[in-house]
Length: 482
Image 1 (cartoon, helix red, strand yellow):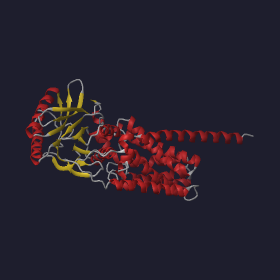
Image 2 (tube, helix red, strand yellow):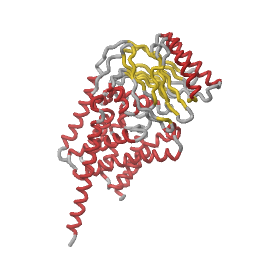
Image 3 (tube, rainbow, N blue to C red):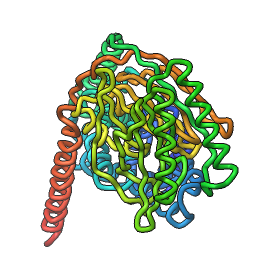
Image 4 (cartoon, rainbow, N blue to C red):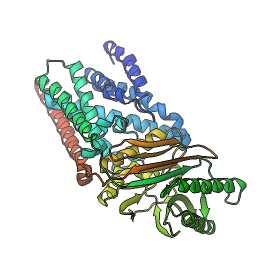
């Protein structure tokens, strides 16, 4: 790093300070539209290794905003590894995009940053145990006109749009109007954003009609240790009271949270009978999340009871959070028709994966029932990631979380009702909402087609950039040879 480039160190630190509010569990959505662009402009203005160091510095500061959360869910060493990997993702994305831009310095290379970003995001979503948790696409979950873009191309589409804006900003700072085709770059970016926001605004005008359904959601934060303890009795007694209260208010479908207790097989069967009787006595559909340990394997299950008290579905969680990696994953996508409305069920982290959400969309689910267990700090992020599955596939999401939020959102991401969970005596939420037909979306039909197209494009552009650089180096060496 030369003296001229030293000034970029405090700039990268300042950007990292801003990214602290973008990369954490409660992101400030508008900061995501320009801070990565400022960092990319620095990367374009500095030498390759210097740019990598500055990007790593800013990304590490931003990712460190989640240090407390990571320590809560995993040991210190894995926490440090995760922070370094998050930093590495930014270094790889910005490094590859920088090389592509520097190789050709053409107007079309404004696409390099969004293409590479979405490519890596897609690979993470499909091939890592935690998916693309923390993707900048999720920062726009509450910016509903932008969030509607997920109905077309998923969260990858939102990420593409955000990073396109950042790339154009970096070009404006670094190249200004000197770049050939600059008006196309800047005008095209503005037009793309206007069209996307216009589509989202238009989509939000829809108020589809459907039958009214009364939902009840209950949650008690307290975890049950020994199934025979007084604490256990207190928690189950409270759930019984909550269910009775919600049913008396008119709730027809009642949702309890994930893994209320982890029970040995005999205790699990006893509790299953008790919950079935609770559903029968109150004439409700009841979903409750329990862990079962039969001595050979542990399972994270969602039990779904009919108003007759019959267990109609025993759903097994597909994707495990870090503290439960020893649990056995499931692979089924059960749906049930209730009074002409098709319901699906999934558990917490399952809905962080767009592929699983789409599988239920393809099964024409109109409502997803989600028992969940969050970690307080990630309540916003977990609920909003789940909400975007509803936008992607056009269905209602009903979610009950311990240490998180009790919420109902529609197929457009509008939050219809929400409450914060609490320790004993817990929290309940009652809401009567319209349940329209599933809103057919382009994303349900095509899935991550945009993401995989970006994977191919990123690979080709990066490979060609390296080939071009190698040829230029060989040519320079030949020219320099006497």
